[in-house]
Length: 383
Ligand SMILES: NC(=O)c1ccc[n+]([C@@H]2O[C@H](COP(=O)([O-])OP(=O)(O)OC[C@H]3O[C@@H](n4cnc5c(N)ncnc54)[C@H](O)[C@@H]3O)[C@@H](O)[C@H]2O)c1
Image (tube, rainbow, N blue to C red):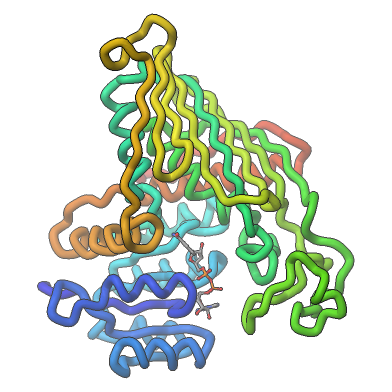
């Protein structure tokens, strides 16, 4: 095979990454799309030259001119679509989170193994420039042996991103600790090179949710001129304060990783700004990303980093392309994986271990902070 013909399931929203695969003269091309929205399919045809589209994903999977499928539809569909695609003999790129339950991930892992097809999870943060820089510092032993990780995730505009549509209901997403946090949990695993063994978490709905009717939309709301959370959108304007909202907006999970590393991840959806702040502490010093463009290394007193200084600051150049330049690279990596077998930066097991923490963290929150252990991988599945 010289060119991978891609089918996209869920063509709107995140399905926009299809643009990175559409290189008619190159090694991948968009061949088909499936979606529940006829309008989104029409837009998709407009972009990719009137390709095959369908509202029934099974029709897409029957096509011989589709070699690989990207599952970019909402979280609760990932397990069903990924398994069906693998069974239909397609390679699969699946958006995070891999599934909304641990058992769902395990079913995908087993199906991927049985099918012999390539399966990859869309952990694009592994491809953002700041995290590989931090990983390199850690792996070179600059900060000594890693012992502690603190991650603060300020989700400014949490309302706009997550509370106006399906994300806000745990039957669709399990919770935002999984839906949003799956990236950061994976980053904790990626940076330390270790997986989580046990979790305990606390969280609640402190700002969103409430007593408004479930069918209330911003466009029809009497408070639209005064509400901070008002949005103008045709698809995402359900009221953030509606009764059915049940995913915590203020979460903290603590994790014990292999090797005795302690980690904490705090995610809050009503902060003024959007920011990810990672601090990794080793026996000799710490490395911190102050934001996605600035990394600081600080050594313990007496441990010189560079001549006459215990501190160093690195400023990274902003990179073009979605998610700090990560999206085009991860899409290209999937194609290389399919065509040449070159291993990408993520693994299916990493996808499952991140879901495990997100799901168990959410369960722990709902059980008053109970400590829960990550179950072993299914028999026969290895990293
Ligand atoms: N890796 C990242 O950085 C990143 C960023 C955004 C979203 N995502 C992931 O992408 C997925 C989609 O998120 P989104 O915000 O684009 O969602 P969305 O609600 O915008 O839906 C995406 C598309 O899927 C379609 N769709 C909805 N239900 C469907 C169904 N049952 N079957 C087929 N298509 C369906 C929608 O019509 C839309 O075109 C989520 O799993 C999310 O976690 C990942």
